[in-house]
Structures are given as C-alpha cells and as structure tokens.
Amino acid sequence: DSGVTQTPKHLITATGQRVTLRCSPRSGDLSVYWYQQSLDQGLQFLIQYYNGEERAKGNILERFSAQQFPDLHSELNLSSLELGDSALYFCASSGMAWEGGNEQFFGPGTRLTVL
Amino acid sequence: GENVEQHPSTLSVQEGDSAVIKCTYSDSASNYFPWYKQELGKGPQLIIDIRSNVGEKKDQRIAVTLNKTAKHFSLHITETQPEDSAVYFCAALSFGNEKLTFGTGTRLTIIP
Image (cartoon, rainbow over all chains, first blue to last red; front, side, top):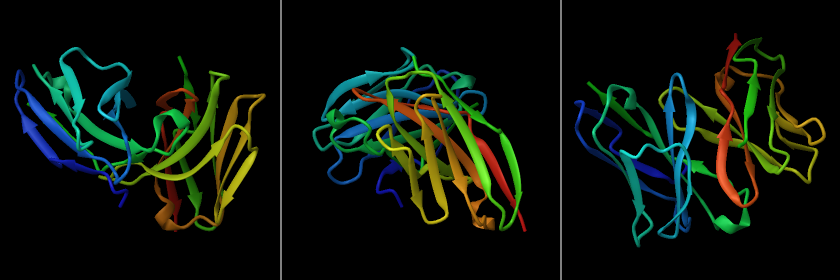
C-alpha cells in the first residue's frame, strides 16, 4: 500500500459526459501528479500540482483540468468524454518538489470506460 | 523533451535465473532513474531508483546500474521467483522538472 488513495476504482460513462476523479496524497506529500495509462500510449504524464499551485503540464487535453485543494487532495476533471479517453488514470504523490528527483508513489488508479 | 526507450518488451525467464531489462534516455540533464513494477490491476510500485551521482545500487535480489556516458541504465533481478512476474517500467526525470518520462514497459514472466 503506497498511502495514495484514489476514488472511484471504476467509472463507466457515456461519450460527451463529464467525470471527476479524486486523489488523496500520502500524508505530508505536497506534490500530486496525474498520469494516464492506455494500451497504445503507455504511461503519460498529464499534470502536476505542488501545494495548491500548478507546477508542470504534460500532454493534457484542453477538455481535462485539475486542481489541488487546501487539504492537498486533488481532482482531475474530464469533460466532453470520447471513446479514446478510456484508460487507467493514476495519481502519484511526492515530497518537496524543489528537491528534484523525489520518489513518486502511485495510487491504485481509476479505470475509466467511455461507452 | 526526454525520450526513454526500454527493451525487451517481453521477457520469459526460468525460475531461479536472472533477468535484465535495459533502458536508454535522451536528455543528458536527467538525473533520477526509478524502476516501477506493475502487477495486474494495480498501480506502479517503486522498487528501486538511482541518482546520477551513483553508478550502481542494490537491494537484495534487485540491482540497478547507470552509465551516464552512454545514457543507459539497467535493472537486474537475480534468483527470480514466480512473484517477480509483472510489467516493469523504467523512467527518467531531470532536476527542476518533476515530470517522469516512462519507458514502454517490459512484461516479465517467470517460468516455474
């Protein structure tokens, strides 16, 4: 158990809909990262938040957005869903971002299926 | 940006033998190289990592080596056991940029 929790575990929805994925980092971790894992793209970095502020952005679609709240939990919002958005979405957390190269610990993931 | 290549994509090893997975990276500024193990239905689990100021690191049956000049690093698993069967991912990260770039994964199967 990494200490990172994600809800829900599974999500099935229809095209065009909007969903919210939730992540709680390990106790004391200030950084939260979101990754997408699909069969053809592997593990892809989406976005990082550090202590409530956006810190880095990967290939995140404009239809996707995220935020980190004062209690450090994070939410990833996916809107106007398409079939191709079906994937596993992982959240990871780590310590002080400015130390660089800190271990990232992954949650169990949310499996999103868009029908 | 960083590009990480990982080989092989699949690997079958007899129980008790050793397994080696290799990765190369493109960004010479990368200085942190973790390895993750992912079992079916679970998130990636950090199993070992190495920083650029070290050439080798060992943790029981698992070791990682880093060649900064050649920009490649490898995972070595000795005395393999059935529970080592999983998908293994290498990754690279450069200081000041906390974005991990992952390799494409290696599916390791241990044959009893």
